[in-house]
Length: 368
Ligand SMILES: Cc1ncc(C[n+]2csc(CCOP(=O)(O)OP(=O)(O)O)c2C)c(N)n1
Ligand SMILES: [Mg+2]
Image 1: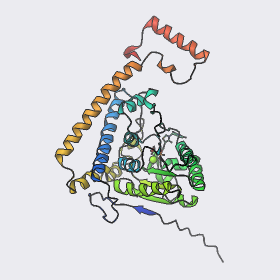
Image 2: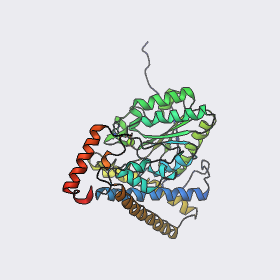
Image 3: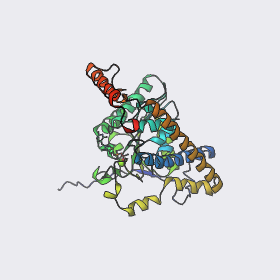
């Protein structure tokens, strides 16, 4: 008798509530209060403008590289909204919306992007970890912080973020596996934005969904429309509740699309078509939410204009404050700062040589 090897992928729930035309599936509506929805809409709109302006600043050489959240605003805003300030935020490098939700100052964001470590000075006591550039390492940090909360006897949780590409890293598997074994209160929130720089999702894993990886670890896995704020809230709320109740971790896959560059060093025209980008533009998370709010008569063009003016003013002010602060911090020997508590002798010697050079020849054009 031949052995049957036919493979049936596990059935994974897909949550979708808010459609691209702004209509909702009322049975599933998580009934988010109006004021909260309006705040989330402004946060998402702010982030979109912020990315746009940051890109201009980078092209002008006024800041360095950064990773835009463009297209992923609903995934980030909806998920972080389901946590409180007592819960840990363990981000990767694209979660500017989550940082802003937790009260981060845009001036700090620009300072960090301009190479000033002062921009990543997280206030004492804030349960927010710094940007994590090495892919996937934040997952084990999340497990550690969540487990520490359990040991302290609290019901606080950790939410951690990463991309489709990061699920190929060992750290991801180690963290989900151990969190499952320990029943640690972690929400693993994967933003499947279809690309890991120029590597498409189908080269990343042979699994039909990323959510189904949860099955192997014995934890719930759910896939949501990541451009649907309400679906993201529904799935994350359930996952956070499970974690708080001691029922362990959940793996959420938010299906979304990186609408812009990976970082400022990337050119998506080299590896994807305009047609695909146009298809995803139809599913834009911000347009979708605006249509919903407008249908509810909670939003109109006057309010839109007032909000846009508010956002522009806030960004203009942040850029001005950033330039002032950067000019103060930008001393000739800044490159030696923030690496060592006490500089070793060879660095002290180099610093002295550099300063002597500037004394003799003056600073280069532009002062840095
Ligand atoms: C350990 C490690 N390997 C490689 C890189 C280079 N790198 C930066 S972003 C990235 C792709 C990440 O893709 P994904 O996890 O899907 O996140 P996305 O950028 O799409 O948000 C890579 C390979 C890195 N930062 N760290
Ligand atoms: Mg990705």
